[in-house]
Image (cartoon, rainbow, N blue to C red; front, top):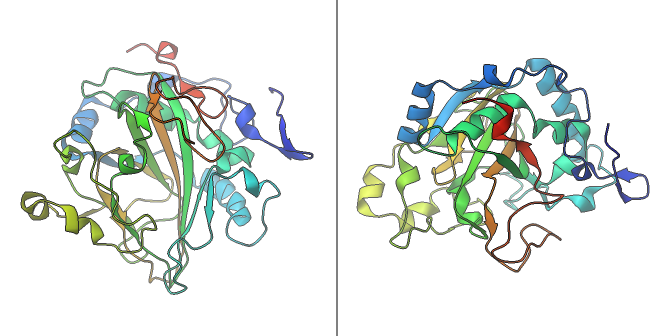
Length: 312
């Protein structure tokens, strides 16, 4: 295993290693080709802006990851919490609508680190970054956790991911949302608006962010055109535990609150095509800068899939 450098004495920073390091998955003999999507799945993605219920983890793997959740749900804080790019114990600020949301936990635990590299995820991502399915080399952008407790879990307002990511260019990003619990309409499942990945403004930019704390579920409708409002017909993902949705960076999505008796926890992985550039001289993530117009690469943006690893 590659040497893991420390963030603080005794606190490993797993972002210093760009290969799997734990026991989440057996990487010893990977047949990358077995994880390729079929052409009809690629076509469906570019039609709707998303794919639903793609198997990526076993129940056992989900449970391993859920063991690491304790560091972020208040049960036992990780010593390296300062490494997180963001941490919100309740991003809504409303105790009746609790949403735990964090970024950067791949740096803190082996399971979250290795999740970013699993072939079940990175091979389909490679295929979905171009409309014709031509495979791309892929880099990791950042991860997220979303947790909604039973009875009073909060919502995540409708949004497009790239609206938050215009500090990178061009828009060659893709998001993978992995359900660690069964998701239903009752516990706050992810919802999508089919075809909304084609919703841009005249300058080719994404829709503006209307609620940075996700609290106002329907705020996006204040900036939609009449045509977009007519097409605003949510589809509930109903993701099963261990499955994922893959969605375009412009696909409008969100999730309602959890009023059920069970938790709704998810791990989200965000990727971009190798070659994407920094679009700012300011921070890309907390403490991380790459000069504007320079390539996104280095310690925090590792290659997770090289198109040379598999034949098209």
